[in-house]
Length: 374
Image (tube, rainbow, N blue to C red; front, side, top):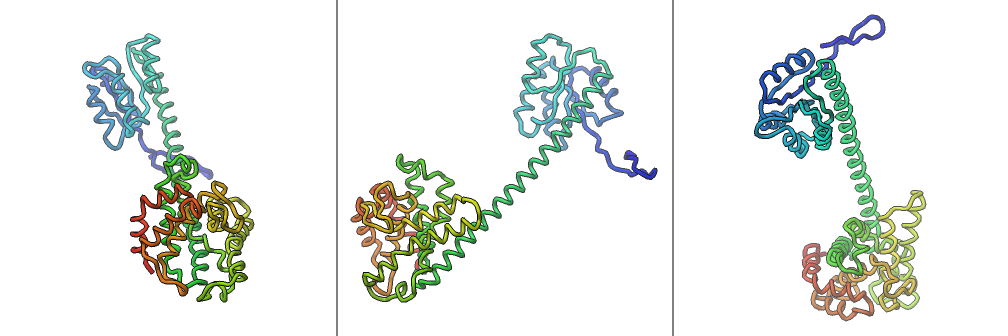
């Protein structure tokens, strides 16, 4: 215990941890000399071989500093230092070489291997103690900064998880709101979300899609997909829930749902005050998933690659799921019938390469549909 003076002539007793110094030298006299110089200031451990020094360094608690001789039989000090620095458990322990070698090249080699200092023999006790103290102080500072960095990284990771959770909840609440307007959709939102992810993962190495379908973007697409029909909240019940075929006028009203969805997401983004990546995909999907490859879709009549990739993926997912789902105005089609219709739309309704990917993973679509059946 050491006394730390404070105001008012009062002393506060605090624990001051004693640093541990490991001395590695093959000569008993040198180990004895180092121990006698250091023992009044530090906890001292000794090793008379390089291998033994490595074993002691790997034990917990690890030494705070290592004094290392170079010229030792068997494993020399250079090799010991190499192994210390190669091991994540010991690489941050400062190493000071103690050696009779005074050549500049030897010193340069030692420092290149990761040593923090190089002291030549015969040892000057005041210089040795001063340098040990200096490097222990530097290590204490480095340990503090490393600990602080680890703490901050953990905090950043925690905050990132919180933000992601807020995003996920926001999307699912908005999607659930849209779903309540059309009770027949059931698990449609969940199924289309998984369809889109399956297609994206299949196409991620395709030359046409690789620039867009990074791992991060696939995750954002997966999270954004549930918002594809959010615009239906703005469609009157008489049209949205009509059991029969829509009139031309009614269909024109229904065709407004992509624009309503995009505008709702843009308004949320405007209120937030910043552009958010996952909302970019959400806007693309909501606004353009009714576009067709040949330009005959709506609301803009986009064609080919002018249609965002996210919307092209959703178009296949949405149509397949609509086909296999029962509606008041139609029965559910079989998986085989739905696949046939999607294939027939290749190059007309859908991007040909996406349809090809769909064919390759059609069984995955079937599995998702059965698992999350209404």
